[in-house]
Structures are given as structure tokens and as C-alpha cells.
Figure 1 (tube, one colour):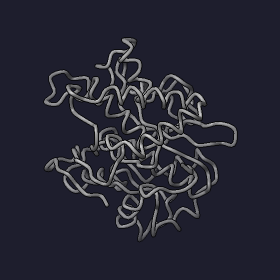
Figure 2: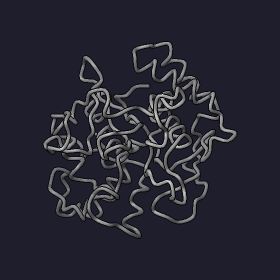
Figure 3: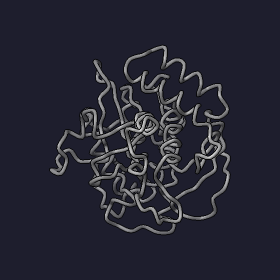
Figure 4: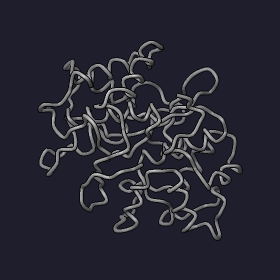
Length: 293
């Protein structure tokens, strides 16, 4: 796909004009993203009700609409400082999608990358979404959620090396080969939680998220469709094996693998997002199917 063009998820819609005044420097654009969003679990503020439900903003246009409704009268410019409580509640996917949208507005190819980060907690790899942009020579990985001035990271979060973040495909292949412990990858390592949000089934679903995002369907991390499942029992693991293998090969420069896996996404009903999602939002409410159009 053309990563310099907006998708239906990244399109700012009626708010595109707000992007015209953005800075040109990529790290400064990431700072604007952090000015607009606050993480629902890591922002230091407990949000409930309608504010927590902001995490279900599926489209960049909806994120910007929420910001402008709250801050637009006095703070129309996106660079004008927002108080943390007044920022739009979101998660890593939203930081990345908004950042990607801003870069695409400037004609810079950018995409989201779904996987797991080892740099948030000792001994556990949290589910995470980061961005990549093409700098003219290579894809640069950047965690737009994090301030590069923060001292606790031993690497440059604006030009990340291999290792601190692993794609879902890399993790799945490592688990399948017996090289990685799947219970160390997910949202929560707690084995006594009502729903075990880690392990093989969780990683497998994230492989499917990774493929969808790479094909321009930058869905919420609680959208579910096709061959996704909350168990490995009866799951189409061989299909996941194949797409993980192809995505890793694609990342290593295999154009034929990239073409094949993207064609699989477009043609295999177990992979293709067709506009209908079973939504399991952390904001609560009834888990149910929803037509996204």
C-alpha cells in the first residue's frame, strides 16, 4: 500500500487543516501527539465513564473532534499546551495512529507496527504499538508515546534499535519454536485474572492485528474478527504460522513475501477485516458485534 496516503482510520477528515501548522521535525511532531493524548492506564489519572470511553475513538477524525470540542475555543492550535486531564484518553495505538496521520499529511510514508515492548516492566513484555517512517533511506522506528528526554530508557526512543520492541510475528515464531515463553507477553502477567491477557492465544491475535495495520486497517486493539480467538483450541495456527513467517521475511527485505502476505490479507476471509468487529473494550459495557461500515 501507499504509506504516504491516509487510510480511513488515519484520515483527519474535516480537521486536516489543523495539521498545516505542525512543525517539520519528526520528533517535534511526536511531542505534539503527546500534548493531545493521555494513556488510559499509564497517564497517572484514573478515567471513568465517558472519559474512559474515549479509548474507543477508532478514527483520527474522532480523536481530533474530541480534542477540539474540549479545547478548541482557546486552544485550536494543536501545539498549544493542554493540561493532562484535558487531553484525549487513548492508548499506544492512538499515539501511533495520530503520529502516522500527521506524517502522512506531510507526505512522509509512515505505518504502525504491532508487537511487544520489553522496556516498560522488568521480566514482562507489554503489548504495544509503535510507528515507523521512511526517512528516504530506511524505515525508522519511533515510539511517539515516549519523550526521548526521559532518562529511564537505555536507547533512543525516536530511532529504536532492534530488540526492545519485537513484532507480534517475531514473538509468535519464537514461541512456536520454543525459544520464547509466551506467558511473558501480553497485557498483564497475572495468572489469576478472570481473563488471562497473555500467552499463545493473545500473541496469535496480535499477529493478525499486525497484518491488518500493515494493510491500512489500523484497528483498535479490542476489535476482533475473522480467525481471531480467545483460545488456541481449534484455532487456525498454521495460517498464523504462515503469515508470521511471511511478515518477518518481508521485514528482512523479501518483496515476494510482502506481496504474498498482503494478497493473503485481501483474499483470505480468516484474515481480512470486512467492516464488522466484535468489540471487547476495556471501557466496559456489553461485548458485542459492531458494523463499522
